[in-house]
Length: 314
Length: 240
Image 1 (cartoon, each protein chain N blue to C red):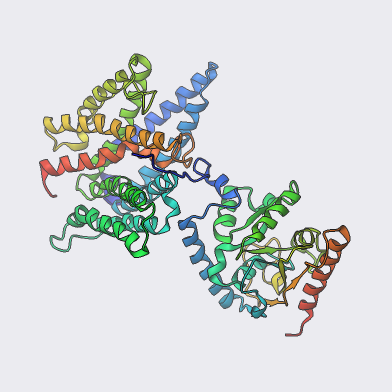
Image 2: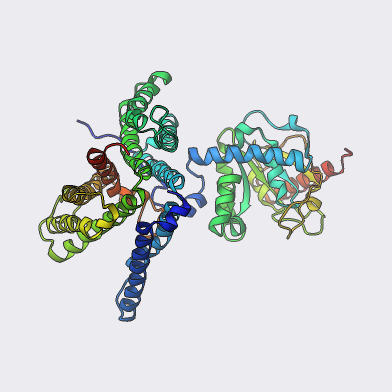
């Protein structure tokens, strides 16, 4: 992934075309709706958010592997920060600091080459990293000679690092794969389609609540509709990964459909348990970073390991 | 199993600009890191580019909270004052900055709140409230407040009249005030220029004083302002 390969890559260019067309259509549709007197304020806020996010994401992918890896690390760091601020872990500078350093080190590991195999990205260290980081996190109360409240603090730090740092950072290792353009762009696109499908089908056919104690607006109809759509999308976007067999296309659909909704529900019950509505307010119309990337946290690692299972190390 | 005790940050759902405008700000490790690096670079810049000279560092109190007052000739004043306090107290040093100027756009707010650690002072709309925030700040140990009692940068080079705010904060309290004088600010960074010129800066820190013996009446507030103004002016006339 470099700037010159991006300009010659048909997959990258196709996605840029699709996204520009969709954004154009969305802008147009909202104009028409507003002209007819419909209230589209929240949709407009959401679209404004997209008009900032999409150029940043596409820009990073265009700039290449390094930009994507640094971007993912920033996303993970600020995502972790939101989680830490929401739970109160942020008051503990030691544990927050360890998590920041650990997430930054994932970026370094993803950028460097494997010292044994000379592959791009030190995959073995990435897989082993949670062992070391969890050990350091558990060591912090020992070094500080503290016990009160430490079980809660280290638990939150471990969950925060593994879930928002390590799992999300699988995106960086997807960026290291030869088919990175297709994989990354497909995932970003498919996860969004899955979200939209869940919402739309929920509005149209949703009657029975999916998990009323976690997220009262989600319905079984919406959930099944999203899985159905997500199973279809990989076939429509097969050009993103022409090395995939039918089994892999089906698995990809299931990962996006089920994993995406799981990520959403996990963030929902975390928020509900804490008693907050949004994880932050960094993106206009979208809440916090974690409200936006919640689905990707499950989808990225599951997809990555499926690719590795079928195609092995690159 | 008992419920865990979560303590969400109060500024959780505030936008970036609003979280930074809020005062006192929530401590933030990333912001502290950026500010420490910026403060270190700033010290180097002032020493090399402006050959800044600081006299009277020994007058800065070692404990308790105190106020630094200074004449106001350019934006360099704030930067010089920030560089005069020890690096370890940089996150507890708050230059009072006009909210109607330094906290208007997001860009200015980012610089004012993150790099300068400014206290948004509502000089036009809620002066009394802002003074109360300053007094509250000084009740805690180890805070430093930087004030420019003239209220605005001078255009003529002459020092303006000290406004009553400083007097209202310190009258009848045991808060220490340290008068300072910066020479060379107007030449180094004239109002309206974007880039400072490499002119010499000379910061003189005067002896600390205290106005606990005066009451909070209008007359004593005026006396305090006049005395501080005289002290700052006298520092400016000290031969180097």
